Image (cartoon, rainbow, N blue to C red; front, top):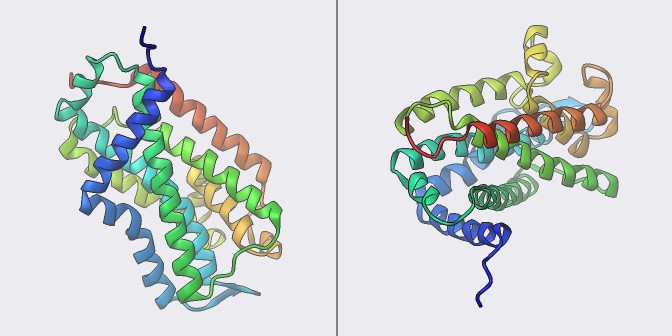
Length: 264
């Protein structure tokens, strides 16, 4: 008697299929994986100042781009592609198969994680080769980096799936999602030193996870002395964990309760 595959094993297989489908879409591959590298090349070439002792703008910007990449790869990509799949009827057909809904979500999570790892490696390699970015030598910073990537990826994925119910159609999804991401990037200290932004921007940004991801990544890639440049004169690592977990729970709740498999 054949054993019925578990939701996890089906999700892993679904993840492999998602990766193959993504790899066939050359435009999406280039935009998702190389766009942050292109931004690093542009900003790193234009702004060559030292913003603090031992901290170049490229070093600061790399931390922001890695954090922003988690949002672009997870939240933005899913909130745009899922409505398109819904419009094409792909989700409705999947819902009609024996595959559990959880397997679909696992497959998407695998795609996002793999894309994110490739993007981070490209950013680190490009930053080291062309802008002299230095990597941390303290093992504790790499531990922080690891949980930031894992928690940030999970949070971004859950929120992307949850937000996919907002766009009314696949065609309009990009117009709804992209401006939100761009605004949050400006508000969260990705493109500018966070403490140089107006206080109202800082307060708005503090509500959302991107600000905390960028601050967390700064704690990894910038010297500890730079913590004095932060709003509270510290990295606030514990608060970062709490806020990311809260947003993760919110994303999972709405993903499970409100997700739409077909158009109304």
